[in-house]
Every structure is written in C-alpha cells, then in structure tokens.
Image 1 (cartoon, each protein chain N blue to C red):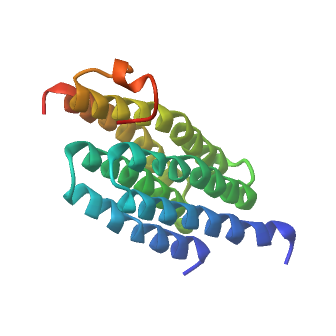
Image 2: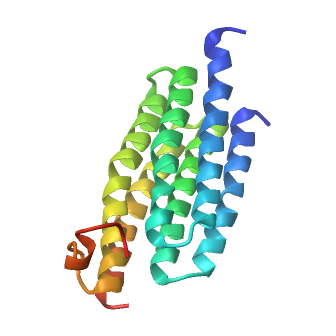
Length: 109
Length: 83
C-alpha cells in the first residue's frame, strides 16, 4: 500500500470524525455564541481534509479542482456566516451589536 | 461499497444532532443548527460525487455551499429584528 493510498482513508476518516464531533458540540452547548464555535471545524478542517483526499485520488482533474473549490467556498463563507449569526443574536438580545458599557470590564454578562 | 460511500453514510449521522438543535431552543440556536446542517450536506454531496465517480456531481456540492451561505445570511438578517 503506497503512502498515497494510505492517506486517502486517513484524511476521509479525519474529516468525518471532525464533522461528527462538531455536530455533537453544537448539540451539547447552551447558547448560540457557544454553538457557533463548533461550526468552525466542520466548515474548515473537514472540507480541507476531504478535498485533499479527493485531490490525492483524482489529482488535479475536474473532480479535484471542483473539490478544492467547494472547500474554498466553505472556508471563506463560514466566518462571514458566523459573524452575521452572532450579530443577529446580539441584536435580538440587547437591541444593538456594539459592546455595551457594562461589558467593558469583565466577560460576557 | 467503497470507503467514500461509508464516509457519506457516517456523515449523514451528523444530521441527527443538527435536526435536534433545529427543533429546540431559540430561533438563533435553530439557525446555527441549520447552518451546520448545510455544511454537513455539502460534505455528503462532495463525498458522494467521488463515490459515484462523476465529476459533474461536484457542482451540486458547490451550488449548495453557495446557496446555504446566502440563505444563512438572509435568515440572520431577518432574525435581527423582524422575526
């Protein structure tokens, strides 16, 4: 078994494991701010690992390039989506998203 | 059934926690569940495209990645004030 053949299942298993753990994290956490942290690994580590597995198997053919493109889209859009969601959560909670006076010292209320 | 199909099946199990989050909690909690479900389904389509060995199927994953991003932004915008 060549290193390339060995790397494909390892990368796939890593991507799947990261995604499942992220889903469990989102389920277990209490509020939206905590839950949002767990969308990160599923949208950054997992697509990169799976796209790398596809590229290792297909080289940079049409499939490989498209897999890299999907990973790139997920990696770039997830932070924007997380920011927009957290902003929405704060506006719903406090009426505005900016740091409030009572939050300047200490952590989140 | 190759390793890609097994990975797709395993990834599908990740939709269960997302579904549970979508059914409970505040509207923003549900939106987070929906966003993660979009990511998981994108990955499932990516893996299935390789499992079926059809390059054209990767376009589905790409379309879903872009559309779930746009949908999430619209939901977030509406959840800010109107819903």
